Length: 116
Image (cartoon, rainbow, N blue to C red):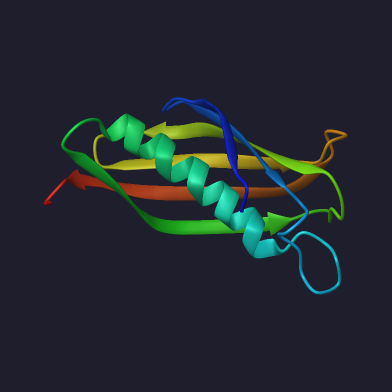
């Protein structure tokens, strides 16, 4: 996927992903690639919040696509909406190189003790 993480905390995470190599047959960024970037950011941020000996597991994800991208990079900016003891919710906004909104994703993770 070519994801490059630029910033990571429980409250805010930022990463970029190239459009090239992540496209649909028609040449635009695949909607699933948007979701992969968002889930990567939301899940890692939730695990940072969970802390040592705890684990975040995704339980809900919703994506709304607003615009397509055919070239360049996509930047995902993940912001915490709720950081609780057993649940986290993050919103991830995807933009193109010109800062235009591509998609918005909300992800909720359940936090539990690591059983492994």
